[in-house]
Length: 477
Image 1 (cartoon, rainbow, N blue to C red):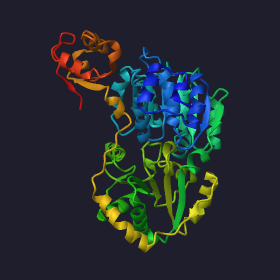
Image 2 (spheres, rainbow, N blue to C red; image 1 turned 135 degrees about the vertical axis):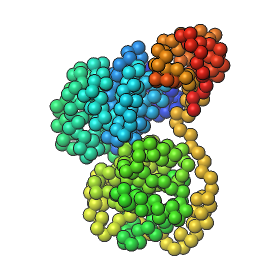
Image 3 (cartoon, rainbow, N blue to C red; image 1 turned 90 degrees about the vertical axis):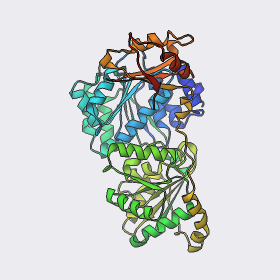
Image 4 (cartoon, rainbow, N blue to C red; image 1 turned 180 degrees about the horizontal axis):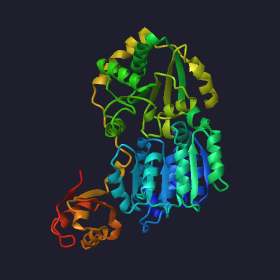
């Protein structure tokens, strides 16, 4: 089934075509038609199955652009996932000018409050920060028609489920609710029974996601040999892009230091880092500026990074669900990938549970032989020294037609979106359809100019005033 087969608007179809979304995944084929019919849903689907687009596309299609208040609320367990989903909503809704705001902790509450005062169609956030905004009256809920609970099992594991329930109680009862989860434990079922209206249950078999596209294996190791076997595995596999998962922040720090000393192109990410550093590391990894990301499970939740060919579990996760989320970073969107787990004698007990969840046996493979490592070493060293080729972000395709302009005036100068629209549309050949999201801050305004007309607007605005004020304008950095 192709995306053009869905009953979605021209603006959304246009973006999907540019983003190279052609064939819908199984979860998208089942979810999108029901979402467009405003049907409550419980969707059991593994990570990497394309579920973000399955709810993002209908939401972008259904929001009323003229309504300035939030119409959809998406709850996620982690800040990284909230930021990722917000980016996906803005990318998919680009030509419809859908605006999304992400709300999460360790970021200025006041800045988020200002963002929410502007035209906002979709709010994505972690339960704690979303509830803070609700309590303080800075998040308007009266127009919310769609609630998405993403990665519900992880919300439960992280102790957020009570906050999720408290948020649900504040929302209009007439809304549509959809819940997405890799597993659906009893506590999640209770939540669904309490707050959903005759939901349709959709299950995408894990075989469609993890069996066909990911090669699973374990290597039995002694604790003291773990590091050297890890290095042997990376030399023989020699991936362009790889995530190595550890159980604790301390283990991540230690392994990062050891691999750095061995001249690996690597960085680390865990919950102990500052939020801006976590975002910067993820961004650089997406772009391919380094090859190995050493991470705790914080990086496993829904982060969409293309072409990761190998995931290594340096430590076996205590919870079988975490294994699925970790290895879901590879073999995405139908591409193939490898998941190699280093297992000590003590960790053997976790493997049976993981096999049960996957519904397939995980083969035991020997550690790489000395001969194989010696043979692969020159090519590995060459790759480590070579300059990485920077990957394009999926939204870069859209940026060719879109230019973000910066103006050095905002709320302090009593400027409103209508003032910018009025002036910009007075330029010959420019219409309201060429103007995207307008973000007015205290002392600055950012305006997206669509349809490849950015340069025309930039040149013309140097000689024009807005509400009688001459503003500096340049391409936003």
